[in-house]
Image (cartoon, rainbow over all chains, first blue to last red; front, top):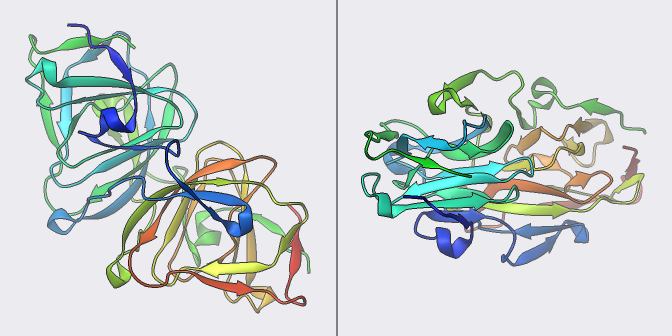
Amino acid sequence: MNLTLEPLTPTAFAPFGEVVQSDGADPVAINQGFAERYNGLANIDVSQAGGHVNVSLFTARPRPEPIAIQLMERHPLGSQLFMPIQNLDWLVLVCGDPRDRASYRAFRATGIQGVNYSRNVWHHPLLVLGQTCRFLVVDRAGPGHNLEEFALNAEQQFALEP
Amino acid sequence: MNLTLEPLTPTAFAPFGEVVQSDGADPVAINQGFAERYNGLANIDVSQAGGHVNVSLFTARPRPEPIAIQLMERHPLGSQLFMPIQNLDWLVLVCGDPRDRASYRAFRATGIQGVNYSRNVWHHPLLVLGQTCRFLVVDRAGPGHNLEEFALNAEQQFALEP
């Protein structure tokens, strides 16, 4: 099966979380007219089991193409937000059930679009294109086990063509 | 008084909050070796008075130079994090007491440095240089009044030369 890359839009991504973008949001004028604020772009959900917000920076390198999809992951205790901090397209791969190929969706995000995966949403680790990319990440730290990985078997694995 | 711009370092900025940067932080290898994670870069403090995390995007325009410093602000109920999402230097102006000129500090941040102002820290609204700049902002939403502004009188006002 070839998975077709879709453009990343808030509506298409809604089952999985929020798209962090100013496009389509209503700005508020602030800072004596020298700035606009686009508010409330992500539902940060990190307080399960005594958790708190963890702000991190990620540096991610591109994988060989076509990209071998061998593992999906999810975080049962918290949401996870990725905001690119350079203007370069990147890929977002999610699914409803990693065993069900038909449930996979692949999105091409622009360099000014972030995503916030809702708690428990299956997603692939960062997929960047062409060069090393940096992201600001807002997720959860705290007690409990917040990483579930699913290793696809040989039959479940597939290749993603950017 | 001329305020000298200092380079932004975690030590120099410590009385006011955290510098959000990977430099000096210990990375953790993740994503099957294709990424590094720099963890715990900011103390997000937004739960006062029933608050919650608010993720926003800001678009800020440069002010005429030299920059007329006429107003400082602080947030009594929460921290406020600014991460530039383009690689352009920007300015950070803070003070211990807006009436006390000697308490002001001005920092030149690089385009890969963010800051997280601690709750109640006096700071100037965003100061960007040369062109319109965008920031991801992590602060607080919720009940209560979370903005205190101090308008400097004519004698207290000064000019900041980038």
